[in-house]
Length: 412
Image (cartoon, rainbow, N blue to C red; front, side, top):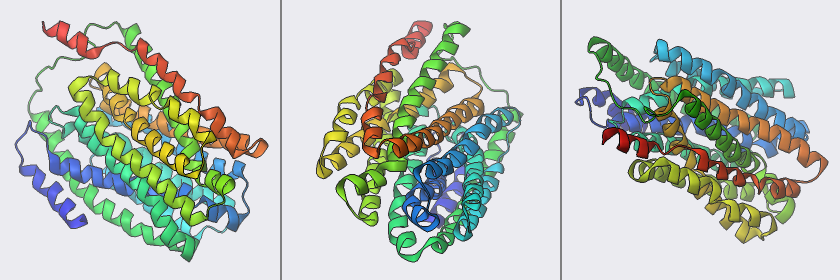
């Protein structure tokens, strides 16, 4: 598969400008799969690390906080810088940081080294996400929602595979086996090097010819309304990723504690949830392209509320089923939110991508840390009862302007 992706990314240079460059979208999505698979290994092996290093939930939350905050704080800075000065070959450099992080994690002798390894993987993500999101938009041919969904589904698929691979490789073979995943990072470096060459050629071509002015979604909006809309989107991101932190970080512990399943079984159930999230991601962008992104945001955030409220009171079977529904619906939000934000602030693709990816990572890390403290002082079950109400924030979608309506009126 890796060779075909490399060949596809190389062959894409010969495609005519203006169309959707699917080989590049495939390559960047595959790289996103590898990147997020590496990231997801960290929470997936928490049960192993908890036992090996005698960690409490607060320390586990601190690992997630270190990883997520390293990524979140740097991403907007990376995106803002590359808006002015694109860095096509920063993509393989970011993946190299993740590779080093994996090797450090596989040999970590103490908690401090675990934090260092998590920070290195987070650093790799801080470079990867803003620039790869820009590549996806450049290759979209105007189908921005579709391109972001294809890009995002690679990441969600990688997040789903991480726990499954951890269950069958790391759990039976131990911490040192994490080093084998550095081969995935090495493959990612090769793929991203080829993507970087296409990106470099596109930048050179766009500099050589003036770009035609394009109409933008917020042309009739005041700067104050744009800022307010961005604030609403940030609140929605908080709702989504704070709730997702409760599942990504503590779902295995919840299943083990409440239903007494094995570590491997819990990780398989986590894979099922993350797989559902990957499936839901692919729908959000194209549906937003067709019907408008506000409708997707409404449904994806507020639509999960009945299921999140029911989950803490369900048995094992229905807990798994409800988590699948939550993953399917909630995961459709991010592509729609990101493209909506890019349309609000055109010409700042890197800054907006870095801001929203960074904030998403930050909320995931902060959520993991705070929910870990709460779990230590109460219980994992109480955490899920409290988080069940987070989708109510989706009601704020009513304050988002209808960009499609503005475009229709502007073009009339």
